[in-house]
Length: 67
Image (cartoon, rainbow, N blue to C red; front, side, top):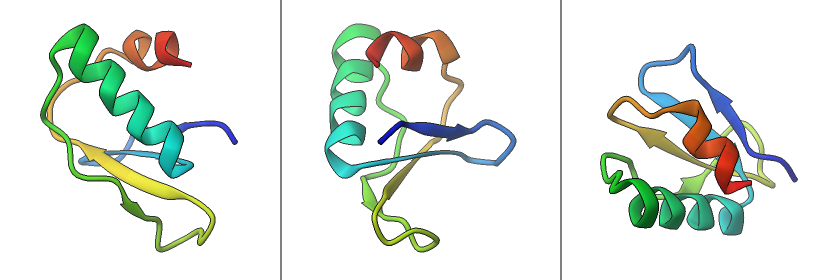
C-alpha cells in the first residue's frame, strides 16, 4: 500500500497502512526533528487504512525519502 498525502487540506493528512505511517513518523522525527503531528488513527473513509495529520510545514521531499 502506498502513502498518500493530501497537501490541499488543513491540516495536511497522510494516509496509508498503520505500519507505514508509524515508520514515516519515526523517520521524520529521527532525521528532521519533526514533531508537530497527530497520532496514527483509523481512517474513517477507508477501513483498511490509517491516517495522521501534520500541524507544521513539512517538506514533501522528507516524505519521499522515507519511502
